[in-house]
Amino acid sequence: MRTHDKHVLMCTGSRCSAHNTEAATLFQQLGQKIDARPQLTVKRTRSNCFAVCKNGPILVVYPEGVWYSCPDETVLERIVSEHLEQGNEVSEQVFHRLGTGDV
Image (cartoon, rainbow, N blue to C red; front, top):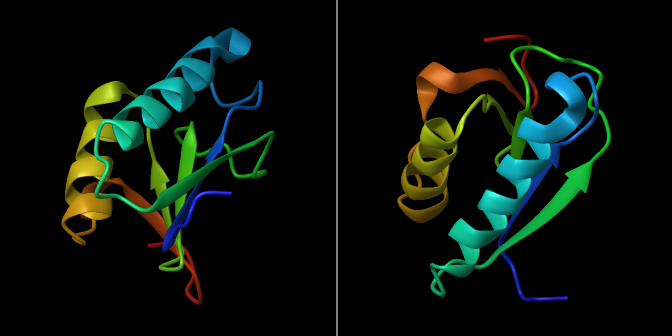
């Protein structure tokens, strides 16, 4: 397992997107974006379902416990660059935080 200080989980289940294709594609793109930034120490894991299906696919960043709606590659790029690289939440895509109710 690679050394990591953040863990990103992404739902690729069938309810997140039509025919599961968008979520699977975004998960692959997430890996490419992380790998293209060797300074990032981020592990990614595919999940079948988070059971929230709110504007999915859903992407969760730990240890912060920030839950994002990640519907397309533009949002994915912002999460990788702004949150994973720079440490700033992409607040308009956050719908839940660990320890609180819905945002």
